[in-house]
Image 1 (cartoon, rainbow, N blue to C red):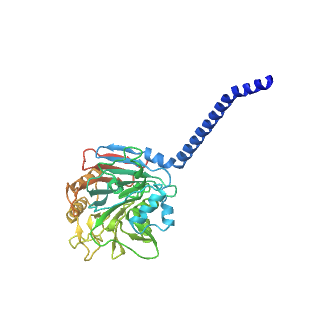
Image 2 (cartoon, one colour):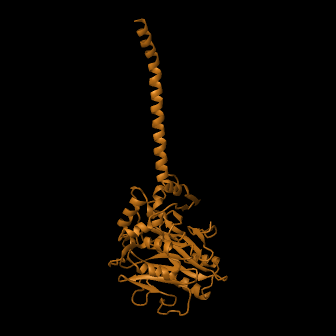
Length: 384
């Protein structure tokens, strides 16, 4: 009996120690599981985390820069049929980039200006004013595995940002992951530049058996896949174009060789204009290597309605006087000459020039002025 009592007493003494060891082991296992889970999530979202972490504020207008890490799925977008409207594009972006988080992509009235020219040193340049109601902006760098690296400008207002919401924290920056699908102008490492401009006419809505694309996805594809103007035109011919935001647009495209075209859609048919083809006050100038565009159709015929004829005349006069040869500083001065001070646009909203960019298509650089602050420009390079 005495030995049994000693065994029972020993068991009572050891039991708390055994329970403590078991609890410690369980806690260690749980911590290990949490660490593994966090590590798995971090690995799964490593590109998104790196992209958000790359966002930098470069001035107080404000403007931001972002370097997109990883694959944003443009090939998958095309493979699954593209998008015939903004809703389909948004659904793709939500599922493939935003991991189910809702976003909006909205392109309102864009009253913009573009032109191309040649510097005295022989470099091809492309100038662009983006005019709209106030909104923060972002320069987005992308470098797809199966495509050209590029820089493009994005109006963050299209992604739901504004004075009350800015990408200044990890949580508020998540929506910026959609930016690769909302470019409005840009340049790639091959020296191709593209800008889009609003036309006040019926929305383009091509209906054939080709894959569907929208206005901004067309720009994304051209920047990712094309090295020359000819390649960009051939690419556009492969797809059915559907205008974003129930509006109509045309594109000016230029490349490092100095080639340029304006692509328009009239009655859902693509029209490609080369230098000298467009008409202003009924007269075309032959033999030119430069063009300009604003917010009216340039295809000869009864199509020259819209707005921006005054800006176009200033651009055309400036280019013609210089025979298409402008330094980068002179190109920025020309953009300044057609910049729009705050005014009320056709939607009853205050509109003004949000950014001006001069892209050097040979040096692969861009000089940017934000909010018409032409005294404080900054330069970025695709080589950085």
